[in-house]
Each structure stands twice: as structure tokens, then as C-alpha cells.
Image (cartoon, rainbow, N blue to C red; front, top):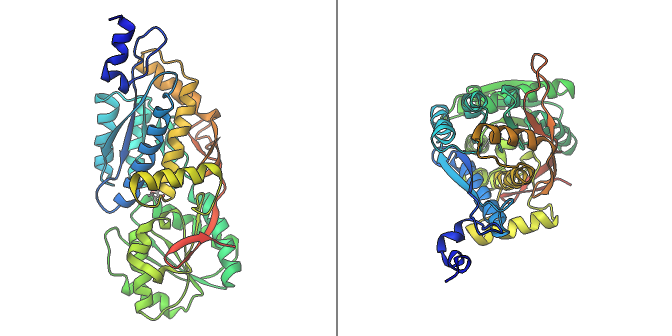
Amino acid sequence: MQINTMLKTIPALLLGATLSHGVMAADIKLGVAEALTGPAAKYGVAIKNGFTLAAEEVNAKGGVNGSKLALVIEDEQGKKEEAINVFKKLIFQDKVLAVFGPTLSNSAFAADPIANAAKVVAFGTSNTADGITAMGPFTFRNSVMEADVLPVTVKAAVKHFDIKKVAVIYGNDDAFTKSGYDVFKATLEQQKIPTTTTEAYAKGDVDFKAQLTKIKAGNPDAIVCSCLAEEAANIILQTRALGMKQPFIGGNGLNSPKLFEIAKDAGDNTLMGSPWSSENLTPVNKAFIAAYKAKFGSDPDQFAAQAYDALYIMAEALKNVKLSGNLANDRDAVRKALPSVKIEGATGKFAFRPAPAVAGKQVGFDADQEAIVNIAKGGKFVLLK
Ligand code: 1QQ
């Protein structure tokens, strides 16, 4: 048997591409650190699915420059300490080329400094708090930050519901809910919408009656909620139990099927801003939704779509990286290749924009993408028209 034929029959070859001279190109290892268990798992599992689907598609088409993408997936449990541990494992033990994640901004503030110190790209697909990309030149995100999403959402809500005054509720011990609150506060001031009362809660709270009773007394036209999905859903349910009918306004955190699993129709009329909608029927998004349903037996959400796009953004960058085998050089080459990537993804047209410099130094890159406003109807989000 000729060596060529022999190589072709080795099943291991299915795992990697052959170069023209019959040598197998090494896989490209990419780390994925997401909350696969715990309260943020609904987000994290959707993200993992988005990555898995995109990586399979890229590999089915021959990978990148003859190499297959190999995802090393770890559960960071939505906890800071675990995000740190998992980043260290992926970077120092598995020696991945770049890391995706973690799921929550709260964890990213703990883990991203490790990636920046090790000079490895940390690519967030769901981190929307202010300051994420200020952590260093190796932090990238394709998630649209609350600062870009909330002003558009509040403006649309004020018009749609003829809002004159709002109450605000937010989690004061999570980086995302706190950052969203700061943005809401500035936005409401700017749009001259007075606040009847501002209430806070802590991570893990399940009873919001005390806060909601105060909100009820102020009789607002709407309730602004800077919350993760599960908390938001319970807040909505308890608001209705108190006989209040006000619509809710939220950000990225609300765009999860979790909201409706808990709140069901009580979530109707909630307004939320997001870069992704299942109703955006571009060819890429239609194909993504169909492939996701076929593979996982459920509908994708914003978080799956952003992870899916992130993998394609990375694959596009890798096309322009000539891997040398020197890990430090290759990791830096990824950082240099990412900023100029432009794709048309499930979330629409995507490009990066440099985050504002910190102390005169270039730091990371944010998503340069528009948010669209959605409204909950019959237990799901549809475009607000
Ligand atoms: C953040 C978020 C959450 C909604 C991610 C799931 O946007 O933590 O930044």
C-alpha cells in the first residue's frame, strides 16, 4: 500500500486535515469557559451550543488553513473563583491559542486580567458591562454593551407606552446589573424621565415584595429592571401578584428563554434591547436558527447567536495568522488579526471598534453593532414595530 493511500485510510485523519504533502496539520485549540451549571447556566449552555455548532460547520468545510478547530470546553459555574481557575487551566495547562468567555461580566472582571497578563486573547460573547475591554489589549467582545443598548431601548419604551415616570430595580452586587443600573440612571436623566423610587436586591434573592411594595406606592408608568433573567422573571411574577400591571424595561440580561419559563405570559409587554432577533430573517440568521434547531432540538437565543458569530469571527482572524508553533507569538498574532475582522453573522453585520484608551494606552475592542428593540408577546420576544 502506498503511503498516501495508507494515510487516507487512517481514521484519525478524520480529526485533522491533510496538507498536500500528506502531513496532518495540528488542530487549533480554543478554550471555552462558560457557566454550564448554576444560576447562569441557561446563558452558558446556549453559548456552548453556539460555539459547538459553528466549530462543526467550520471543520466540515475543511477548518482554517488546513487545521481543524478543537474546542476545550470548561464549566466556570458563573462564579469568579471558578472563572479564574478555568482560565488558568485553559491558558497554562491546555495551552489554548485563545479563550472565549466567561459568561458573566462579573466573572470576566476576575478572569480577564489573567489572560491579559499571560498575553492571551479573552473573547467575551456575553459581557456587556462598562469597563470590560478597559482591562487590557487582549480583551475583546462581540456582545453589545448596555451603554449602547439601553438608551435606544428606553427611548422606544417611552414612546411606545407614553411613559412619564419610572421606578428602577437592580442587583447591586453583580458587575452587569450594577453597570446596567448606572447606564439606566444616566439615560433616564438625559431623556428627562423622573424616577419614583430606586430599589436594589442582592444575588440569590428570591423575595422582592419589600422593594415592590415601595415601587407600587410611587405608581410608576413602567419598571426599569437591570437584572439577570431569573431574577427579572421572579420580580415580574411578584409584581403581578401585587396587582401591578406596569410594563418592564430591561437590557441584554432579559433576552433568554429562562424569562418565559418562569414568568410565562406575565412577562408580556417587557421591552428589551438586543443585537439579535429570531425575526431577523437574513440568510445567515435563518440558516443558523435552522441548524441550531436541528442539532439541539430547541430554539437558539441571543447568547447562542453571539457565540456562533464569535467563532466565525475567530476563524476569519485565523485565516490571516500564519501559525509558527511558538505559542506566545501565535497568541499575539491572534490579537493582532482580530480587530480588522468584519463578518455578516447571525446577529447581522459585525465589526470591532477600539475601546476608549486607558491612560493613553490602547486597550481592547468592543462590538460596533446596533441594538434592536424587542417586546414580549405571548411568552416570547418579537420585534417592536
Ligand atoms: C453580563 C451579561 C449577562 C446578561 C450575560 C449572560 O450581559 O454579565 O455582562
